[in-house]
Length: 131
Image (cartoon, rainbow, N blue to C red; front, side, top):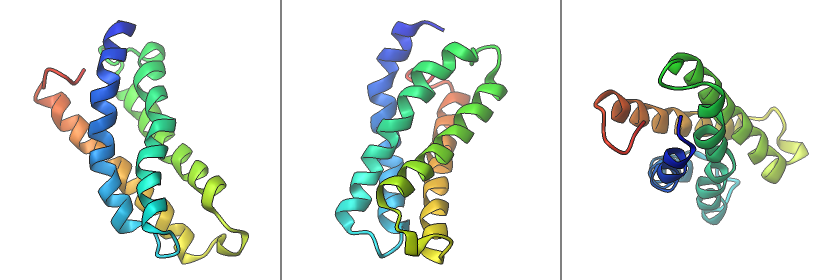
């Protein structure tokens, strides 16, 4: 995989991802989080994981030859890391194991699945800006 192509793809892919994931986080994260925090999470969580998914993992698992392995690694890493980051930043000891914590984690996973689904669709129809 050409690193220059990965860097060229990064801004458009990041923007597309946050446009998909942020509305889901705005609507799905538990009520204990302000709208400002929910919006921040939509931009910040992807900013933390997306560079690894787009710039690092394709160099470890060539998507052209190992698409399935790349997807398993990248699409497992992103929601797990984002749940951990979200909990470290906004989790409260009193919320551990409660419905609000599980709702937040489920929402993060759903947001990632939605952006994954759109990305896969774009990949399958061979949109020029997808790999």
